[in-house]
Amino acid sequence: MKLKFNRAALAEALGILTSVVPSRTPKPILRCVQIVADKKGVHICATDLEVGINYLVSEVQVEEAGEVIVPADRLTAIVRESVDEVLLLQAEAGACKVEGADSHFTIYGQEPGQYPAVPGFEGQADIEIALGNLQAGIRQCLFATAKESTRYALNGVLWEIKGKKLSLVATDGRRLARCKVSLASTPSEQVAKTKIIVPAKTMALLDRIGDGDKDVVAVKLVDNRILFGCANAVISSNLVEGNFPKYEDIIPQDYDKKLALSTEAVLSAVRRAALLTSEESRGIKLSIGKNNLMFSGRAPEAGDAQVSMPVDYKAEMIEIGFNPQFLVEALRVIQTAEFELELGQADRPGLIKSGTNFLYVLMPINLS
Image 1: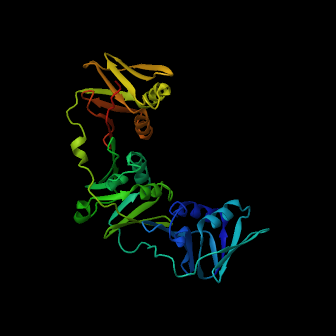
Image 2: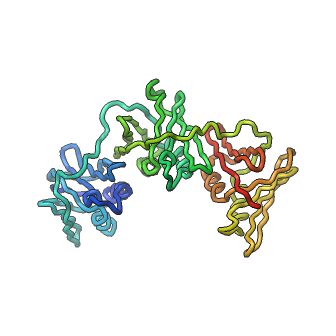
């Protein structure tokens, strides 16, 4: 195999591919990437057996077809540190040679033909969605997934289709984020009935590919796997097994305390009030009275903070505690200048709404 790569294009591809390569694995071949060159172009593949990427590299000249399986970290480091615009890559007898104008590297790899198959995208898509819409939706819900949980369904994002809208829902048991994004076309009735849970790792990967302004993601469901085809990449992933919580049951519908608030102002207030909290007192208190909202934080060994702002509120006074980090993460992804805060009693969750497509449910914490 003999290839001439544009170094920047190769570096971009490896930057995405290495996010899939496991740092620890009992199978050394999974710490490698597979490079295959033929008449159709050059594909680089990576997989951890749960998520895989099949990436078509642009700006490459194929002088001789072939295959090589090479450690991902070594190749990535060489490409990253190189100062050449063009790199020559040659493979023979299980070794990969990378040459620049003043450098020559030989990397020993695995035997060709042994790498696990990473599928491409074939056939018609079940769902089509603008990449920009999908990535915006991912950013509005992914942060709420559980980082570690024995309930595996919480480690992913629920996909639920109604008409030409896709709902993305994530929860870690203490908060819940739901956003709705528009589909490019109405899927079949059978596909629309299917509820799936896509791993958080896969969703994060989708947020890194393509040019969101013009690309469309083609989605295909195959048994217990999902395929995403977009731009130069095909991402394949196992689906999360298990039952997602009945999230509709925890979204409050009967609240009478409602405020319209400035997103930027509240984000600033929450951050400032949280400056004087501690591990023992990690919450901030919202005290809402007539035409005034106060955010307060307190750490016995450090002091206390109070930040107030005028609001249009004339209902019953209420005090409620929240985790400030959970508030900040939600406020960061709100795309409107204002949002609605709805409250019930101090022991019931808070509800944040931004337009008709985003809502966030946050459990209160006891500050006494």
